[in-house]
Image (cartoon, rainbow, N blue to C red; front, top):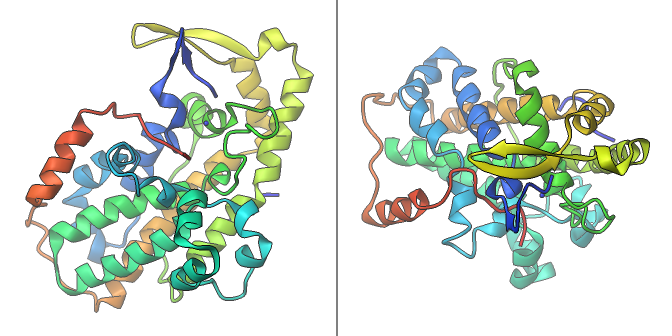
Length: 322
C-alpha cells in the first residue's frame, strides 16, 4: 500500500497516440518544476524565479531525449522484481558501482537506474552551485525535477509498468496522464517549505520505496473498477487535436479516482516537496553561494544541437520503458 506522506492506451485509429507514454504527462512534469520553484525560501527562490520559465519549459526534455540518446531510457525507471526487496529495503542504499559489479551494466540498462542517476545528478548540482555555474545549475535543476517526478510514479518501479503482465494494458497512462488531465484543477500542489536533507541518497531511495509500496493499490483498484463496470463503459472516444481517440471513460476514471483516494495528488505533492528540498540542500552543501540572477542560461554547441533535435519531437512524447 502507498505511503501517505510521502503506459490508458490513447489510440488514434491505427496509430499510437504520443500522449500515451509520457511520465506524469506533459502538464504534470511542468507543474512539479514550476511549483517547486515557488516553494523555495526567499534566499534561493529569488534566483530560481528568474529562471522559472526555462526550468518549467524544459521539464519534459529527458522524456524527449530518449529518442535521440539510447542510454537515456533506463534513467526513468527501476524494476523492483529484478533488483528484489533485498536491494529496495537495505538499511544503506547500494552504491551504483556495487550494483554494476553485482548485476552487470547491461542488466542495469535493461532494468533501470533511476535512483542512481538521480543521486549522481544531485552531486553534479552541488558542484555546479559550488562553482557558481548558473547555466549548469538551471539545466541540472530542470532535469532533476523530471526524474524526481518519475521517482514518485508507482508504475516506474515495477516490471509490470503498463499492466502488460496482468492484462491491464494501458494503466500507466490512466494513472499518470488521464487522471491528472481530468482532475488537475482539484489538485493542491503547494506544500510545506523545503527542508535541508542530510542524506540525499537515502531520501531518494525512501521515495522509490514509497512509490513501489503503492503498486499493489494502483493495480488492484483498476481491476476492481474494471470488474464493476460493463466492458462497454470502460472506454470512450474523444476529439483531440483534430483526431478521434479512444481513451478511458469519465465514469471509469471517476470510480478509479475515488478508490485511489487522493493518491495521485499526494504523489505530485511529494514530488514538489522533495524536488525543492534537493535544490535547497545542494545549495546549502555548496556553502549557500550568492548567485547572479541576471545571468542567463547558455547552451554549448552540443546542447544547441540536441535542443534542435528535441524541438522536432512532440512536446508530450516520451518513453516510460523499453
